[in-house]
Image (cartoon, rainbow, N blue to C red; front, side):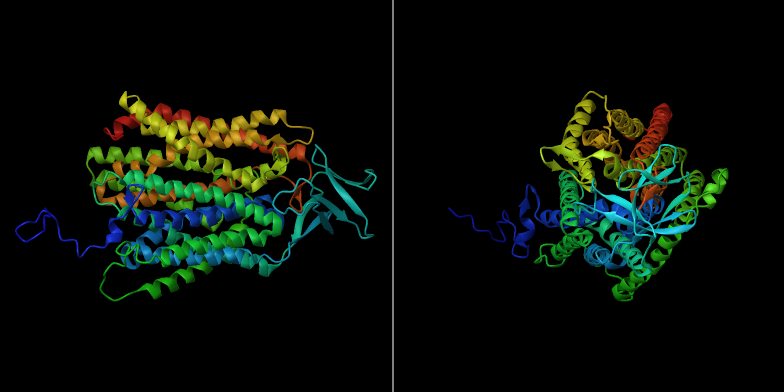
Amino acid sequence: MVDTPTADNPREPDISHENPAQKKEWFGHPNQLARLFTTEMWERFGYYGMRALLTLYLTKHFVLGDRASTGLYGGYTALVYLTPLVGGLIADQYLGSKRSVRFGAIMMAIGYLTLAFGGQPSKPVAVIDGQRYAVQVDNFNDSPTSSPNEARFVVMPSGERLAIHGNDDGSIDLLRADKSVERHIAKGGMTDDSEKSPLMITILLIALSTISVGNGFFKPNISTMVGALYADGDRRRDAGFTIFYMGINLGSILGQFFCPILADWLGWWAGFSLAGLGMLVSYALITFDGGRLAGYGETPEREGGDKALVIYGGAILAIPLFYFLFTNLMNAPEPPAGSGFVGYLMSLSLMGKLLFGTFLLGVPAILVWSYAKGSKQEFQMMVAAMVLITFNVVFWTLFEQAGSSLTLFADRNTDLHVIGNFSLTAPQTQNFNPLAIVVLAPLLSILWGALAKRNLEPSIPVKFGLALMGVGAGFLFLVFGSQFAGPDFKVAVWWLAGLYVIHSVAELMISPVGLSMITKLSIARIVGMMMGVWFLSISVAQYFAGVVAQFASVETVGGQVTNLKVSLETYTATFTTIAWVAIGAGVLLLLLSWPLKKLMHGVK
């Protein structure tokens, strides 16, 4: 007998007003998660594909030198983490998440495609005792990202080409074709320069500025839309974000693999164009959704009408501001010798002063407010949060060498041969991190669950301390491997892979719990501000990661090191220092873990 629903028989609800598409599921989750998963995957494809190439592009194509290149890279990634603070606020108050993601996607696509217009490579120049000589580059396999066969020659007025040989004491010999020494140059007697196109440099910085603006609109709001798929109390939320996080890693792996391949096959322009194509796919997925995302991330209703055009115009006007910050960063002077910490701070670029100053003043100011306005327990929890945020800066400053100093190390002092005739390129080595995350994340989750059942799971401060020590252990692993470098002063790629695996374990100890920790420890009235401080701490760390990478700068001519032995020694010395700083910070935090645990009042 068919049970027909009537007014007196309400056992079956009236569903005539509901959208059947919203009832469909994808692996037990709302169907819309699949669309947001792929949108984020393609955005990460573009971001990480571009990031894998950026430092090498700056050192090899634009011949900016190690110091300017790693500093510019650090400034760019700092803005990538800072702009979402503004983008998230604008979406909440005016645009809505969906329109913010669309606008961010198209801006980032424009930025990536603009990077492709790099023009002809800058012409490297060697300045010897005040006289400028052209430097000719031979690239025997036409692999612009990382060719072991590249060679640089100083071209004399007679037209003779002299090979550049750096000596262990820092001096340089210019060699004839028969390897005899034509000229000996004392240490410091030859410096690296290049003839750059001001127009191409301008295009480069405009592209980075455009990407930074677009990222601010895209990054925070795609995650907000994922959260909106689940009702309060829906236990699927954490699992949904885990699936979403897998999309991030999948996009990262694909981007860092294929963009360098295209850059090597066809040129830098092709690698950046592929990143731009990935971003356009992301834009298409969020824009032409066929109604799948209707009702999610919509524009909030406000008095005064739609302000979208004003916001878009203001965002575009921010590009010249970022351009100014980048130019100021590139022209920042080196700190005077013996100037101390104050002198070092004064030599920072305007971006560095603003980031560091805001963090240095903001943290104690919030604590003072918490003491005055909060209860004793709230103040103590805020103190614990600020201590952990400060150590978070240290972690990411040292961890984020992947795109700068470690990529240059991969290019210069790593044997990239894997097996048979297969070799990686320097930018592709960054893929060891997301691959390790994909493999290790489930295992670490199982471990924490098993320990929690026995009341043995480490506290948040202990996890932070172990993460810092893990960063140090990764660098020490690579330094240990450098002892087995071949006669070409190159380390087997597996030592670099080992560093990334160890760093991935460290990342999994600190990254997933950070945001959760902030929401639990913060006073409810300022939890949004504390989230901003958390992202500010990562932004500060990204900037200073570029500064730390500058300490690993080595002498180059046209983007090629003059002495691989000195290069290896410089990198290992810097990485050793980084390692012991990280381990020392980790030990200190472990010692502080017991008093911090008391200040946290049971927060886990």
